[in-house]
Length: 266
Ligand code: NAP
Image (cartoon, rainbow, N blue to C red; front, side):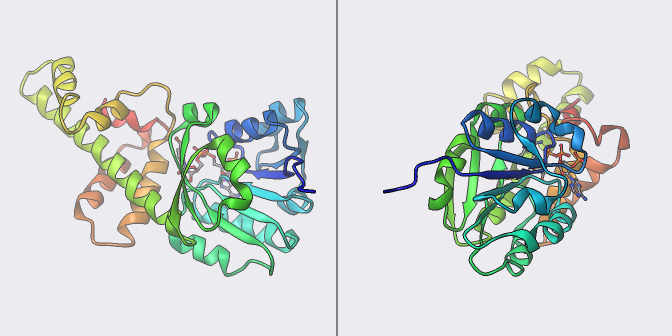
């Protein structure tokens, strides 16, 4: 008979995105073990039945599915050092961090036999993480983890390993570039003495409508520092002079780095 029991999940990385994603998996009835570098962030999940592991290895040891949601390639590689030795054959590891395809390749090369890695970075911010409405860009075979992904959002299969990570860089850099362009258009409108509301309303009726929506969003929290990280991942892979200028614009004011991306549009 088919085993329909909810998969045991280890969730690693309980930051702004990881915490609401882990919450959705716990609320769906998955046995959940969590680890975070700063353990106190797990408190609300532990209060509702999640188990707090003292190390990534302890978290993944009995897991059917491991989900990681970490800041950047350095974090993903550091945590991988700690968890990979404890992965048992048959485990499926979903990395939802935005790290780019090179890091996915580096992680995949280190997997023990019988462990699969699915790169599944997401579009959508904390609001959509909480409601399970993320757009998940998946590289690799998602069938064994479909129930887990379905709880987090809608999955777009991209192809083989690394393709989800690759498409994520394309989509997020286009989005960041769009917000940066809206920010400059608003600066120009201000220099010309035009009301901001008028400029936003008319920009929003044109081809930059989506970027205007993101530049004025209130439920998102995607810090400028993480956006700059994503632009740097892209400019390391191709000649992208516009995005190099966007990177300079994102990083020139240290006071903005912890603010949501919308802050660059004032
Ligand atoms: P975040 O709030 O900064 O959380 C980052 C997580 O990584 C935290 O759990 C943090 O642990 C952990 N971490 C960082 N460095 C580490 C290290 N060296 N060792 C172990 N753990 C480490 O970031 P986030 O907003 O959740 O974003 C997570 C990922 O999703 C990023 O790749 C981001 O680009 C991507 N993303 C973000 C959004 C968004 O709107 N925020 C949307 C889509 C995708 P501590 O808690 O101890 O700091």
